[in-house]
Image (cartoon, rainbow, N blue to C red; front, side, top):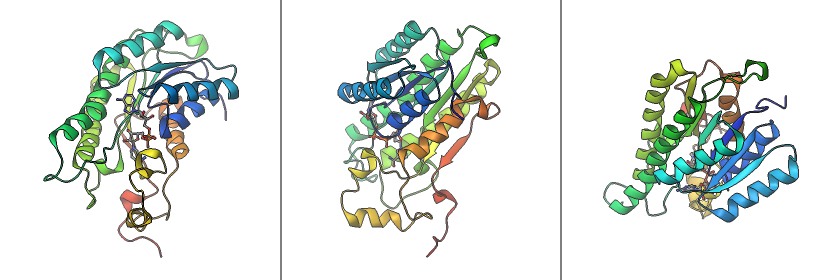
Length: 270
Ligand code: NAD
């Protein structure tokens, strides 16, 4: 069913890798024009090039921005609206999991602050400027376009479950994303702006695989996964597509789990 995002304008952060990369390609495949944002300029240029090769009818713009800086976020949303005339979908997906993030005793304040600045403040700025832009969307019923829009914030299964392999700052940051998402969903519901969180399980992306760099570390997690495997970025992108499209028109304020059943699991199958 291609064309689910026809004529929509989407901004995706963290578009240079993992979930953001797969989501950029999927949204483009579904007909959206896409603003591709990443702090890594080379990576985002690569995504832009791929979209140009695969989906020549889709317009995309690569933007280098750091989501933890308010001016940077304001500017990336302005660039998107100036180029495409509106913003319908905001995917606040960029995030970090720092290798020095540990338990309450060992985590340094600078790691806590860095993680919070990107994972929490970055989502706040993204929501703030997306809401301001979405409020101005002109109505065009003929094309199926409307005021309002869909905001998706990437949280994580660790916002809902404790892990004995701690990353305290990361876990706390994702809990904050969930709480913030619910409140924003309530505040802006009557403006036609839906705000949802997506909670991926552990995935085969650089973010996790760079960290789980030994077989032992991987096995420590794999035993707890009901499906016996890590997830793929494209499987989360498909969830984000649902939340971005009108298929989820009555869904807001939710914690949308794409975790292979992990958060429902007591004992895994043999
Ligand atoms: P990834 O490392 O593959 O990609 C993240 C992208 O974000 C990178 O391209 C990076 O350059 C960019 N980025 C980092 N800091 C940025 C900043 N300040 N401004 C702009 N861009 C920045 O990671 P991923 O696995 O695709 O993760 C995407 C999101 O999913 C993150 O929020 C992550 O916490 C979350 N998540 C991942 C997993 C997993 O297992 N991989 C599980 C749950 C949640």
